[in-house]
Amino acid sequence: MKRDPSRLGGPTTLTEADDDLDTAFDALSDPDCRRILAAVDEPMTTNEIADDCDIALSTAYRKVERLSETPLLAEGVRFDPNGDHAAEYSRGVTDATVELSDAGVRLTMESADADASIAAFDAPGVSAD
Image 1 (cartoon, one colour):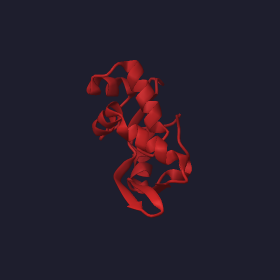
Image 2 (spheres, one colour):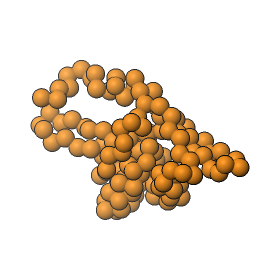
Image 3 (cartoon, helix red, strand yellow):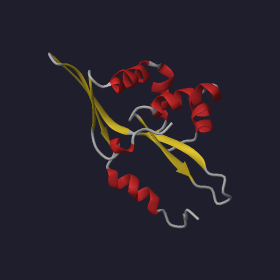
Image 4 (cartoon, one colour):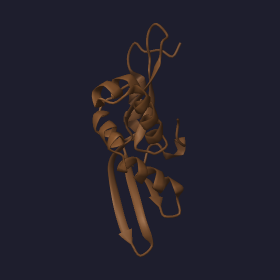
């Protein structure tokens, strides 16, 4: 479910020549995916997403997987002191712009500041051990 890490930390531009453009537009055309993107302004597990969006858990897993194939949804880890870590998801972009030109369609997605995601790992009392 993880996407290419080279896309993290800056704007991502998808054009007609990029198959990911169709994947992103397909995800955005899905009402459940849009509902998930609206809900994950704070990191949530798939169970929390299913509850918050009032969709079946199996549907939530499918939609989260679909969104994770795009820069729209970012995956992280919720650390548990008992070792029961869980994947959590948040919005991977802060802004998206669609441009139409003679050259075709261009979708540019702005990511949150890369330093903010690094700062999340500096949480006091959290250890990877």
